[in-house]
Amino acid sequence: GAGVSQSPSNKVTEKGKDVELRCDPISGHTALYWYRQSLGQGLEFLIYFQGNSAPDKSGLPSDRFSAERTGGSVSTLTIQRTQQEDSAVYLCASSSQATQYFGPGTRLTVL
Amino acid sequence: QQPVQSPQAVILREGEDAVINCSSSKALYSVHWYRQKHGEAPVFLMILLKGGEQKGHEKISASFNEKKQQSSLYLTASQLSYSGTYFCGTEPPRATNKLIFGTGTLLAVQP
Image (cartoon, rainbow over all chains, first blue to last red; front, side, top):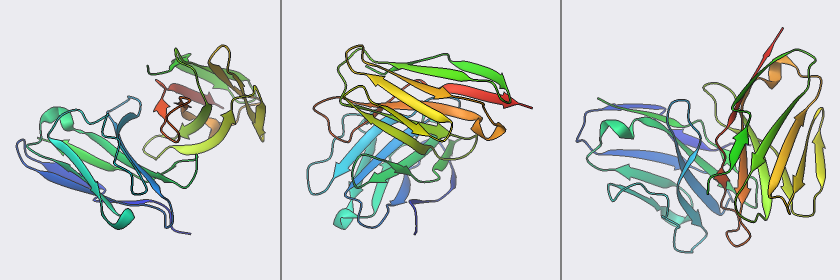
């Protein structure tokens, strides 16, 4: 079956611009996660959606970052006024129970 | 709060064994292990729930000592395909399905 998909796969933007990253989770998965992975680093938790509950935003690094999940399915991570330190791979994962399935990621480069 | 993994990196010859450790400063409900190959998304290996069980997956197995808040991943008779970065993801008792990933262990298996 189809796995988690993310778009775009690569995004190059200029400092100060806004970007939107999209995640399509596995159908039927109630939980959706966003992570950030800088070059050679680990997985930094950003935000977690579970069903209709309020999202856990505890990992968002600043108020320039926001995310929404429409209809309990597709999610969009928005970064406003991008900075060079935002450059990283942004990974989305979904799960129905405990096991998380990751998408291929979006590589964001801020010039 | 982030679990600490050791070693940070290990180089093996094919057929050799390795142990990767994951240690948390907080009580745990479960530990998840993932492997990430270069340029790819993390892939789930196994989950261990509290109870000290040991699980296996071919020649890769793991144990979880909830009292010590530690988990270990055992790779026996390593193969080239085992190369990658291994992450443990820990789940605290009151944050169901939300994982905090460890610092990662880079494993390189050479012919």
